[in-house]
Image (cartoon, rainbow over all chains, first blue to last red; front, side, top):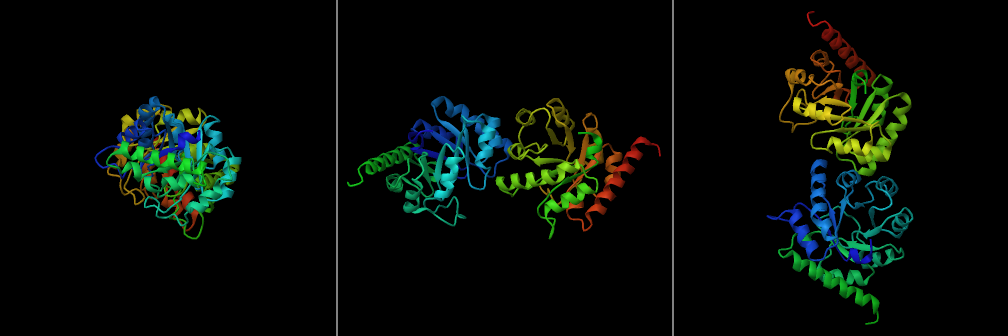
Length: 217
Length: 217
């Protein structure tokens, strides 16, 4: 995974798309430049997850996007997805890497530099700084990183995506603080105009990168 | 898996053990003759499931018991469990068999002879006739097999365990109707005296087998 792949990273949620399907929103997002889609559906049965993952891989893979599965290595293996994203309560990274093999993408959510260093040591493909801000998707999250916590995670050299409460109007400062890109749920899943939402996020990320390169400006 | 392995089959549930741990109850049950324990905990995180599965395998494996994981092939692979048990909404049997390999135990819950034949064709190790009776554990189950539905599943030659509302006082008729054994949750997990509950179930199963061999009596 390159930092560029992480620029705008979509995490799915079955509650947002309204009359559209999750698959429709993902396809629109990838057509608008998103390169990684993480399938996340904590309520779905395993069978439904595999079916959803296969459908996403079939529709998005030919466009060059990668499909990751939240938490479920079994679903990733069964569906031939590109990898998984692991939280700190999910499968241990070393187990996931062993089961998925060296070529799979295995991302890990981290809140502290210690977690980030452990994930780097154990073979993570990228890190997700999570959560940067509070979010209705994960109301149980007690701690948020803020921009200062995000900066501290930059000690690790792995590609780093930021998640949690990020919209196009704060993506610039998140990237300026050190993230390579932004992962979003509602900012794309709930958008009326998905391509416009993706483009707005991409512009904000590009602006953040410019600000990082020219910190005095 | 032999029919004898299925005689008394324990499915765990985190809500029942009270002051004891699930692991304590499983160990007592295996010491009292149970040969298969299925770890089932729909609320646990993946990490917790792997930890629970490893602990069960470490404590029960040396006693000759097998540890299966409900639904989660990833957990079974990570923990080195003996296999999985799949419902009709879980991973497809063919995917599970492919991921786990030919030596793993892969059981499948079935309600109809069609599902039973499909599971036999696709490489199931054993079948679970589920649910035979109504049960508080799965209140959402709309249909129950009853003894007549259970008899119809005997058309398939795979080892067959019955589950759903089974106690020592109805295990005999369930086995007489064709099951090789009985899978229980609360009849063991909620028992004050776990070894006594296991022995009572084993006696009832043995009586059912005698009745099956002498159907005129």
